[in-house]
Image 1 (cartoon, rainbow, N blue to C red):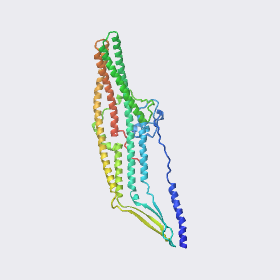
Image 2: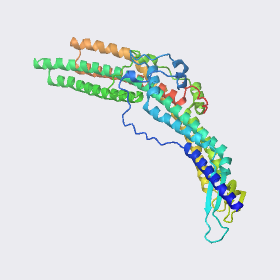
Image 3: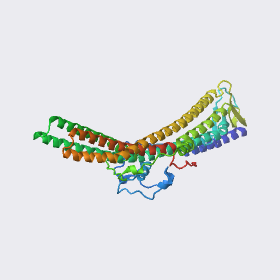
Image 4: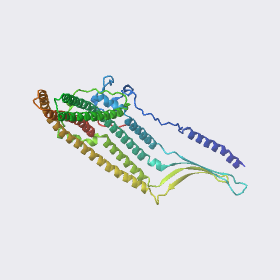
Length: 471
């Protein structure tokens, strides 16, 4: 009778313990809060709505660019455009969300495995005077999860570092793209001005010939010779306007600015003064050799490979028997209470995690090859741009030296046409060639200015050395 009463007195205690355990578990649970998708475009409605201040030391900028403020009143300089782009780019906002996700994975990888609790009840189906309900309570933990905890956390930490470096690379690309679009837009404005000037002169000549034709002082073939250049010049103006429109829309998107918002760029009247000679071969080679240490995307591939090395280690550890240990407290149907340890063992006879190991090793090999290709591709691309720059610079120098003489000849022939010393065909041919060469110089200006940015991007020349992130 006393044993029965003792058994009955234990039941409330077990019930209280179970209730407390459930309360603790439920009390620490996260609560679901729906977050509706924001379907707005998210573009700023004015230039003043853009974020214009931040700790620029944390941005992928040259130290010389760490300016104190951004003036939005007098047009954007090249540096201001780059800073605004890296602060407001919708592309970067989406990319930075990946770092939050990677940090969450790191947090999850560092959590200890939850203990495993088990409860069972046995109801006797046979009748007997001393039979009662059997109860069993167990508490254990998966030791294999503890053994692989360090490797899993190392793998997640390297993934966070890889994500951080990838975002740094994207920020650097946005900075350089903003600079390139800024330069392209200013050069295209100069091209439009030149082409409009060519069109106005061609139209003026055609109108004069047309008036002369009406008075009988010209011929129909002369009017045709004047009309064709005017039509070509007009088509060139329209094409230049289309290209400028595309550039400005790209720049608006990069800044996170609505395309309807006017965007004024402020720069020197003659961008050709900023053109620098190509770097010497020894300087170029040293920068090419340092690409793997400076390019964040290549450093990200290195971190991704290190993460996969830890994943392979995890899979190797998981080929061994997985087991859980714990302690049981139970009472059989005769009312006898027992306490003792237990071990749950998974026998690696057939599987032995061969599939997981094979996949992890294959992924590691793929990442190894991707890094080799990425490094080779970066090296060859930078080398190609540098060689293109040398060729373009040589052509630009030759044209720039000859342009003053061609301009002087165009003025002389214009005066000769007025005095009737030459015919319209000769003058139209020369003037078309003159404007064509001036346009060629501007195109080379654009090419060289953009190539300079491209080389800096591909070699990471201006990019500060990527620092170790602490998480």
